[in-house]
Length: 115
Length: 113
Image (cartoon, rainbow over all chains, first blue to last red; front, side):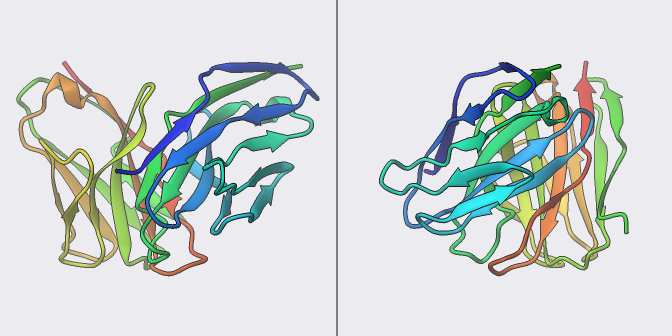
């Protein structure tokens, strides 16, 4: 079956540091890939997505590129802020584009950014 | 616009008790989902529905039942709670088709003692 693997956490950075959270996946066909963010005490919010190979998703300074050859979707940000402290989930949807709510999630990576 | 609302937000149950979690969405979405979130395991799909009156099993359906009698509501039931069902439960909804986005509720933290 489909699976998503994220880098081990937690990740602790100083403000303005560069962020990379690795994500690799296993899936049949051509899944869509997502990064969700969960701020403390809240539900999940879609951060960015990419629906086909070589697509780059971007939002709020975060970027991720759909690399089919390496089955990866690594999340990056050039300069993190304290407000970026949250849990980040990589996820895929393999419903053939019919739905993006039936998701397979990675285990989540806790990010803490210190001033 | 409330989006996806889950009720209750917190609950403590004794082993063997039953309860129902309610998910309500006001976006007229066709599809609704129940997930559970456990430490180190991400979110896992319990059950989902692709329309009023329909339900289907997800990855971890055992011990749970669901009903979608109205389009805007998706109920998750625990008939006989077990400590292994201690978790945070999230509901989500979306519409079919590319370019859509799944919206999540704020979660229900359930503890079974």
